[in-house]
Length: 142
Length: 481
Image (tube, rainbow over all chains, first blue to last red; front, side):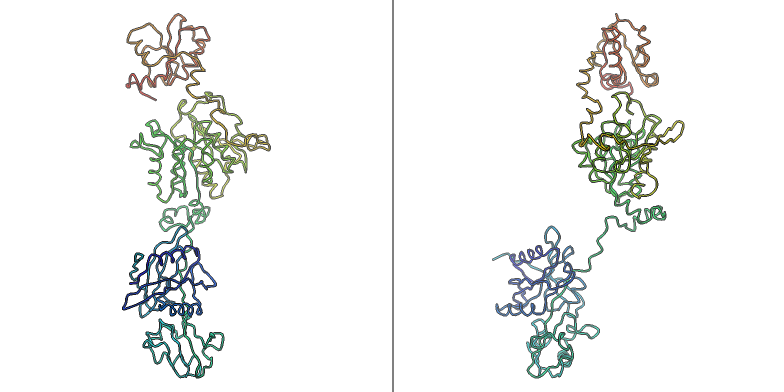
């Protein structure tokens, strides 16, 4: 299970809407204490994919290093990443699976021309075989 | 020994350590030693073929080894080797954007007799599916037209009609059945066409086509098929098609005869090139007045459907610049050449009509109330006539209908003189008598009353609404026709 607050959810949706019809991506920063995975905030990352940005995102290595440092500075961890699927359901692709890492949480947001749609979170199985959907809990704002 | 810096997600596979020191002279050698010691890292760093995964980046100090010597990049003691994932993903390759005209397997089976014809084939069938045809009127012509277009797979069929189904329609309007009597024609038509072909989109316009809505409605279609039975709408459809550049597949019918053509101002004449002016009102009777052989609109509606399909496929010789005359009684088809009129008021060189006009007025049709006032003939209602008969008043009832109409029904005791032979039969009537004249609906008898008054008859009145209204209000045993 992964928990988000309403503000964070709104930030992801707004990023997806603004980037449409291209994919957006960003990092999920937060805490994972005793299995309670909670996203404190998100960090937008520029989609470094040079081609097919409508269906690909790439977070450059140095950007990865940057968000790890950001997280460290705030006493947080990089819990995973979010990205949008323009005109496609919030279901991980085979490409997502090949490029995933089991320890991360992958939040996928479906975006259409009108507005963002479904949002879902996935974790790659240890053997890298399948993405498993996990519960995504939107916590009301404090 | 060089030192590996592991990113947070990979630390669990190295016993939770952030840094791991391993032996090695090159990056490749050091990596091999790393996964040798922490086997759990292997599947995340290497793919099934033993290659470093594309999203795993290795940096020697602050340089990507890909831009150095890759696996052969030498490393020495004190070098920091960072393993940094580049995070990537994305949505699956988008399904090919479904062409609106792509055919499903079900459709391919359905249209197989088309698909095996080289003149149609997949390409032609897709054109049919992408096509949008507007049928103005769902009556005698519109019924067979829309049924066959739907069956043939024309993707979008628009229907304009505002009438309800009447039992007198069923003789020729094969879209409808007994159960539809009293229903709006468009609802019954939509149901029937969907029953024929669920792959077709039906767009309903339950309104009279007018100068106000015609351009808006026609704009959304590729081809217009005119199945109307009155001159104002016929000119309106023509003019709207000229203004929007759409082909107008035309047919008209009367009794045993029909005409068909394709009017397309961009490629040939328009309806006004053929008939610059409408006939005076009343000269050409409508089917309701003059009758029509029920199969004739079937014949002509299918000529319209055939021309429509040909235009969509872009094959064959369309009826552009040709007027086909059909004589069902002699079963003869003749053809007249039509030329574009360079002086045509709408599609000629110097058009004087540049927008839709008032077509009722153009065709000399005045509203019913104004018409009876202007004709100025004295009238009598069916109720008054009934009262006169009940009181056994002295008067002469004159029926000016044709003999075949009188065979259908007649009022007892009437003098029967068809309107056309009235002038030579005036001697059968006396100016001294009280006279009431009737016909089917009151139009012909009004002319008769005027003729009689001009001839010196003073005590003559027209039965308003004719025998039809008599049947409706006084005696339902008299059949309506």
